[in-house]
Image (cartoon, rainbow, N blue to C red; front, side, top):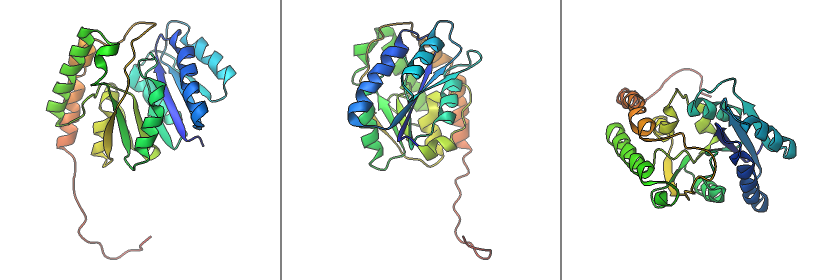
Length: 245
């Protein structure tokens, strides 16, 4: 079993796949991190799957999963998480805006005993994105935290790492990849944040804007709010009888 599984959903990222693979390799090889790299092609219309196949042929640590059609980031993320075998599991964007140089920091944070580590781009957001994207992200974060009673500074950042048992407890529905930290807290897991680098996108086009950062996810946010309000929250005071194991 590898120490780390890196799950990377990819949609129309043919130019970025080989660059990201090389960037990850340059981090995990010198650090001697035993890892598998799982690229999930989410029904791309370009040569993304061909590029994944090429990387897999060159590096046995690269696992490729090809979805039959475009199903969205949550579905691609879930497919990768279910295939992951590592003690720790990480999710990362394919656009190179998440910097693989931050991987050791995630592992170091997990070694402190926390269950989930989320990246936050608050300090570096303006370096990799335009004003509209930064503003829409900040507004979306404020609304999400207000309605879900959370304190996650950058819920839109999908650069995260978890212990294996966290993945086993996750039940994702369309659009809920944005709320993984909240879903894990609802299961009793501990969540923390670390600052991460936010690089500018060099190739391809962003799949996110004001519409899907705030308005499109509003219904999902209401679902999360409802789920939190219906948590059972009981404690067993005493138990007698039966066979104790």
